[in-house]
Image (cartoon, rainbow, N blue to C red; front, side, top):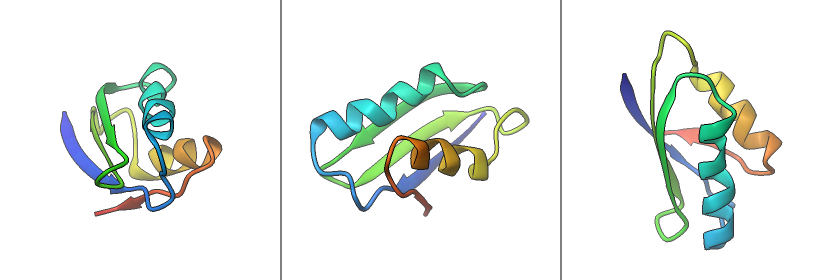
Length: 70
């Protein structure tokens, strides 16, 4: 398991954060997602053998947001 932080510059409210946290249900290998619109970031703990940064970024984009690895 690895924990990474992604900047989400276009997150504007707590509903945005909840929408991003729902990715936990659709991405294989995710243990936990914590999103904060106050900090404009998402911290995700995942199994790097099942999931790549690019897959996470693509899933965030499908939700309507931009993600940047920090």
